Length: 102
Image (tube, rainbow, N blue to C red; front, side, top):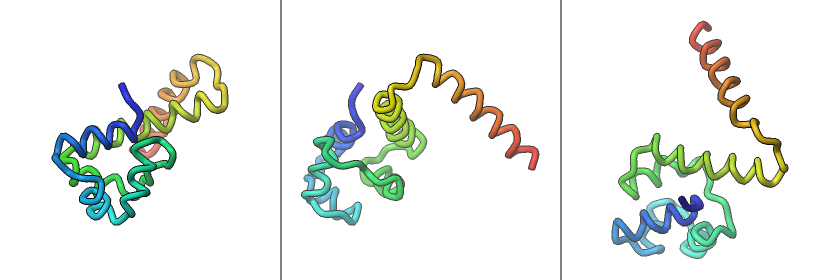
């Protein structure tokens, strides 16, 4: 298990990409990518599809990594009580069922 920045770094190395090469594919500066990989900056959700292509990772799997990192940090930062994820799963199921009906 790792942070999303570490996940990007591992994927970049697995694909034999330099930071400069991946940054160019994402349309960001190399220094910005470096800060993302080190956890000093956050990756923008708008670039997930480009990252998926660059790292040759399924977009759905990439979203799991991205959002689990995001939600874990929010839960920790806001000191949320145990059980918040169980309630969240229920609410997502409810929203999905309502969207299917509409």
